[in-house]
Length: 305
Image (cartoon, rainbow, N blue to C red; front, side, top):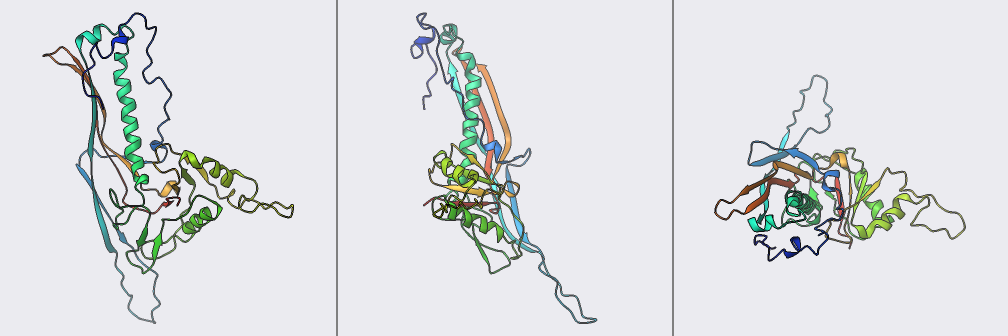
């Protein structure tokens, strides 16, 4: 990444009268994708966030006439602390460079820093999904990756929300069945309904085939009678994410139960000021954020292999 100040020698086309215009990142960028799925929060005081979980009560027990009521407990589980990170970027313009900028390109510096900030937000948030199958950077309260085999706090059961295999009719069915068998930390069945399939651009055609087809994409007719698509009435939509690093990974999520968060500690603060020693103009932008999760329920994922 270039870090030298903008000087006339490096940007001579900004004051060369032969240039009719200069285009600097004039392309339309993707609308913010992280905002469509992130659980957005704001923390205004603490330098970190500490949260934990626990297991509540099980079933009522049968007792004899006049018998004592058995007592249960609310078991404390695990805890996890997340810290905020500062992100910043700046741009220095010399006095001569500002004087010679006939196209007012440099006046767009704050806007371009804003684009860089949103790009950073995308990378930071979606890193939760790009690292969903490893504990290298993040893990849930139980110390397991976002997608992995999770041992319940007060039950011998385990729940594995990490699938395998490419996106297909059979792997989508496995993901749907996982949600139908969801349990809480006591092993008690709970209701959790997925509604969104998160995919990279490479899987958009398979997603269309699975979710939008009138007929079963897994069972082409050999008798002339087409079978209905069993996935079409599951209430699923799909979302194409350009910031997934894998071309094969996919995630089936329940948006109302998702815990993948984007947390503002300090929102983007653009600043500009003059350096009295050099008469250069400095533009900078800085923010303090965290993107992490505590709870793994609400996500089922497969690396696609």
